[in-house]
Image 1 (cartoon, rainbow, N blue to C red):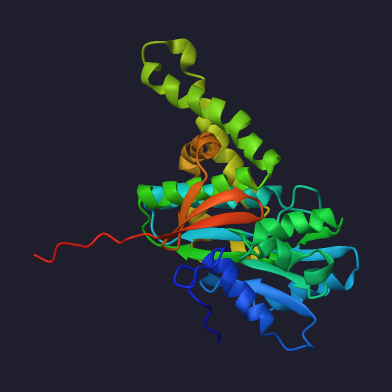
Image 2: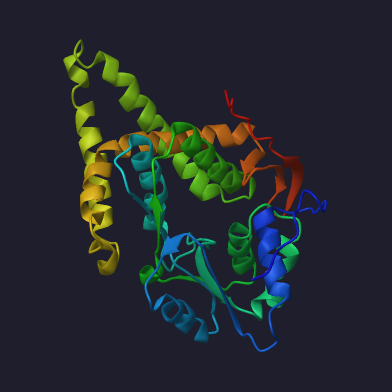
Length: 301
């Protein structure tokens, strides 16, 4: 276990997460051939590492990646909305150009550090996984999706403030790092549909011609349930996963609309708060560390 330097105290030009990863990579023994990454707070299969590393024997595969699956432990509405926002992203993963690296479950051959200039991209960056995605595209190597390497995050009661901050941060990074197709899909598809659906609800009982709007809500709920059938069998068989998917599906429209609002917000905002530190995203490979965020002191009286 290694302790990375604090980026604020040491005036370092990158995010704390990127610094943590760089600190470890610089200390790796020379005989390490593959570097794998996994979040500390997730549940994975026992053979996760084997499944993730095996495809890297093919020279045209630069990175392997699993997805992330949010599994709310309560039926708090904000937590359910956040889980759909995250989980639906797995539906675009596969062996095609839109596949992205996710930092919580991925691996690449060590030689890619130099070949794809990964550390150079990370040096002043806000986030590592989106930069690894762009690095693989630049050197024309595949990002190979391994469905069974999904990492499961068990979430507790989340507040609306927490999920709005999280989803805004994700979309801001997506937009300002140049992943235009993912951002544009949220803006062009999700936002107009959300405005139409939620804007029509107050008038449903006064204008009968608007009643078909209700079917959009059911169709989106159905789409989430159908999507979940493509999840790995071991994940579907986890206790209460199917039940939680069924309950979550009823707020699918809220989650989709939120993604549209996030896309609009990202156009006008470059600053994010992450892990108690404020950053300004200047480009895909460069950020400005604005300093630690002061925590609000609670009244002890």
